[in-house]
Image (cartoon, rainbow, N blue to C red; front, top):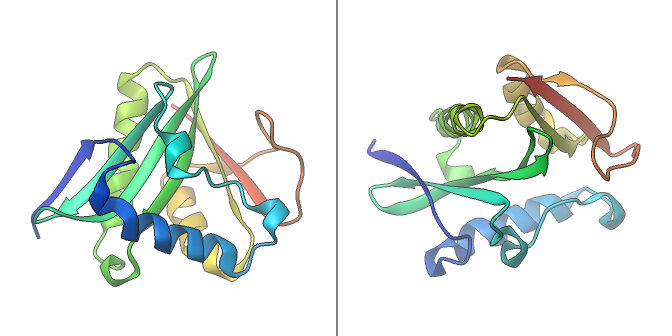
Length: 153
């Protein structure tokens, strides 16, 4: 396994499969009004650090941190290709992003994820890394299809 993680542009031409799969999974069992993913064009923003995990040069995972101001950030668009799951890629990417957030001076990192069965593994990963449930943050509102989590850094 030759995994690397780097800051990249979300508009890279070889990232289409990641975004297609991410979009399909978000729309699979979440009502449209409860989907909070950002399109790749919106992730190309100076306030967002976008990371790509590559295995032997091929993109296998992505994730982003959005600067919310006041030393707070939000995890966005974290996705690992289904055939790459079970290898520790998610944990590696999350820990890398947590390190980036700490180095960038964030005091708190929060996220929104789903309540549906497809999000159980993600919620478990976040909890194992110290995230705890919290009320909606930023511009989010209470939503029965959303779980909000936060971690003090």
